Image 1: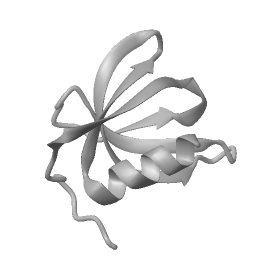
Image 2: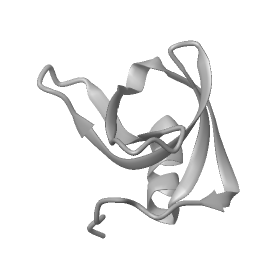
Image 3: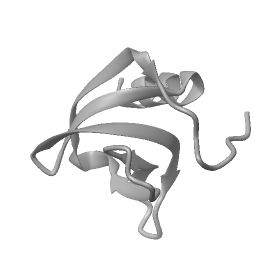
Length: 79
């Protein structure tokens, strides 16, 4: 279920409201991947920052798609 939400948000460029490390934040997801240890991670921007961060998939809770809030990526996304 969580993967489907992220896949939809990435393809539609929707911002998400998430609970990450016990803090509510907005997140612009760019892509899903695996880290060096094989754990699922998500790359994107937290709170409209200027940097792309890798966040741990397992630490993401309470995901809500903000349907009327879209973003333009600062890096190109291949479809």
